[in-house]
Length: 221
Length: 249
Image 1 (cartoon, one colour):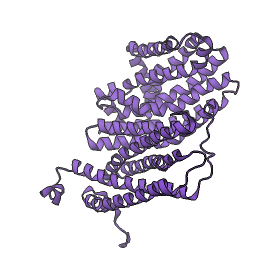
Image 2 (tube, chains in turn brown, cyan; image 1 turned 180 degrees about the vertical axis):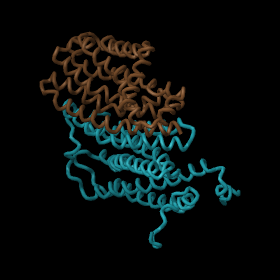
Image 3 (cartoon, one colour; image 1 turned 90 degrees about the vertical axis):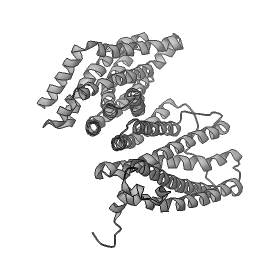
Image 4 (spheres, each protein chain N blue to C red; image 1 turned 120 degrees about the horizontal axis):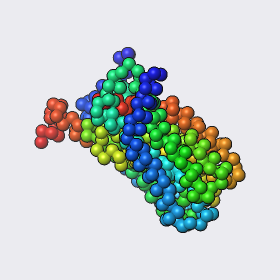
């Protein structure tokens, strides 16, 4: 547990020292979301309708952009190898890194989403549901993304390959996340979608660090 | 272990599997060709014209077996991936990478013929139906697997990384299928139901089953053929490859 906390603290500290990386992903999120009204047109009814999907797709892309830095720097300077040699199971350390990634890449999106949602004229209630769905969904993105990041570590053209591997696996989170808001707006209640999103999160927390660890061990061979 | 059992581990070695695969693939290829000829004959000449869909329905004799095979091959790939990870055998990874292009081909074929069938039947090349969408995502998963294994130069590392992708994918396929299905029911977009198909004539069913068997045999033959090529490519420095009769020429 101590090692877990130490890793989270270390990665957060590293992110705090290199603030530009965190902010680049955030501004990417804001810019992508702002492009949609420009491309589709400013009718309020239409914007309200597409808002959950647009915000979620932008969140997927933003989370994916920052995945590269999850393991790459540690792989380059050999820290990752030292981690794999430490007495603490590598899966615990990987979980710590994933948590730190979510805190720097996922949580800011959750906090920013309602502000951007206002541009799309979403009601306060829908904004609340959107925040809850992102709160449950973005950790899934970090967890599944960690598997892809570990697999593409040190591989030629890793960035594009990562998107090819990870985006199809993000589809369930996208469907339930955006679906929760839509269902709430349609008056069907978001409970079912949010429960399924929670189930995905539980599955991810259990399996993803394990798979990412196996992938890391292959990269470190 | 009893003496009567075949020693399966013997064939886990590429050196002993290579000649075995060489002996087997022509049989499967011949069987596949014969079954395909029979299946196509049934589907074009024996099976009656559907009174609702006309002649266009004959696409399903290719479409349905291709979809089945695309899903089945992904499971077989994941099976070999699991074997490869647990027993650390070289041949399993080669089998997975030999199967992937065939699976991707069938997924693509199923999407393509589906579009050709959808245009006259539904009036649209594509609808966001749960099955179509999951087949598309399955195609993406195949492409991801192929792209990853192609990007890694060391074949052993490529096999292991590919194995993890295949296993993560096979866990996700049902999740993706159900999520797309529920997404579709929420939206209630296209009002086509493929599950409530009219009961099929027996000859149609036979044609479809024979075509499915033909595709199955074709997949085995082509996978064995491809795995032989992969073995030769990877083991080209080994002495047993240099001693092969086909290498003497």
